[in-house]
Image (cartoon, rainbow, N blue to C red; front, top):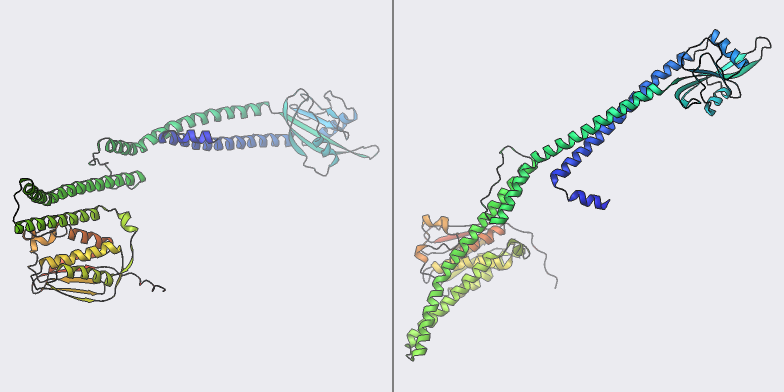
Length: 482
C-alpha cells in the first residue's frame, strides 16, 4: 500500500488531479448505478409479487381442485384444477409433499420455509421467496397456508398452496440493465478522466507559468520576471502569483540595495585608503632614501594615518552593522532602560567633545530593543551634535515619556537636505571635509524602526538642529534579586 501511495505522489499534479476526479466520478457513478439497479429490481419483484398474490387467490373451483389433488397426490398436473394456466402451481400436503396442479410447467423445489407455512398456518399472508424448479429454472415463489375440511367426516387438515413464476425474463432484464449501467459508468469514468485532465491543465496553466518563471530566475538570475495576474482574481493561484511577484520585487530591491551598498562602500573606502597609501609611501621612501622627514611633518603624517585608520575602522563597523540580518537582531532584543542607555552614550560623547557643555534631563523609560544597537544609535546622534556644535557650544539632551531629543547650536541643516539625511553614505556638501562615513544616521533610522519607533531631524528654534527619537514603552522588568 505504501508503494502505491509513493507511486501516486510521484506523479505530476495534473495526473493526480485527473485520477482523483475520475475516482470521484467512478464512485458517484457506481453508487448511482447500484442504487438504480436495486430500485429496478425492487420494482420488478414487486410486480411479480402482485401477480403471485392474484394467482394465489383460492376460491370455489380452485379449492375443489386443490382438495382433489391432495386426495390423489401425484407429480403429474391434475386436470381438475381450473386455476391459472401459466407458471407453476402445486399443493403441499402436511408432510411437505408437492402435488402438481393444472398445467403446471414443472415442479418447484419445496423448502423448509414452505413447510413452516403449513405448521404456522396463522400466518395467513404466507411467504414470498426466490427458488428453483427441479430442472434448475429460477422462479419467484409464493406459498400460502390452507385449512381443508372433510365434508363427510367434518375433520380439518392443514395444507399449503404454492404458485410460482419464472424469473428468466426478470433476470435477463436485470442483467441487461447491469450491462448498460456498466457501459455507461465506464464511459462516464473515461469522460470524467479526460475532463479532469483538461480541467487540471487549464487550472494549472498559471502554475506552469509560475514554474517556468521560477526556473528562468534560477537559471538567469533575472529578477525582473513578473507573472501576469488579473486584478479581480482572488483564488489560490492568483495569491501565489502575487506572492511570487512580491518576492521577486523584494529580491530585486534587495539586490539593488546590496549593489548600491557595495558601490558606495567602495567609493567611501577609496578616499581613506588612498590617503593611507600616500602617507605610508612617504614614510617608506624616507626610510629607504635615508632622508628624514621633519619631526613636525612626521607627526602630522602619523596623526593622519591614525585618523584614517580610525575612519576605516568606523566605516567597517558601520558596514557590519548594516549587514546584520533581522534574525540576528531578534535574538538579542530585550527590555532595557533607555535612561541608562542614554547615560552610557553621554559618557562617550563627553569624551569626544570635552570642550562642549552637554546637559541632560533624563526620566526613566523602558523599551524593547537590542542594547548594543540602541546605544550605538544614541551615540551616533550625539556624535552628530558634537561634530556640528561650535567650540564652547552646548548640547541639550532630554528624555521624557519615551521621547528623546538632542539639540545642538550648530549651523543647522538646509531644508533641501533634510529628506536625505537618513540615506546611506549621504553627506552634506558642507560636511564632507569632516570625518565620517555617512552611515551614522542611516544606522540610527534602522535601529529605531526595528524597535518600533521613529526618528526625525529638524530645525531648532534659535538655530541649530534638533533630533527627536520616539520609542514605544515596554513593561518595567522586575528588580533583580541579590
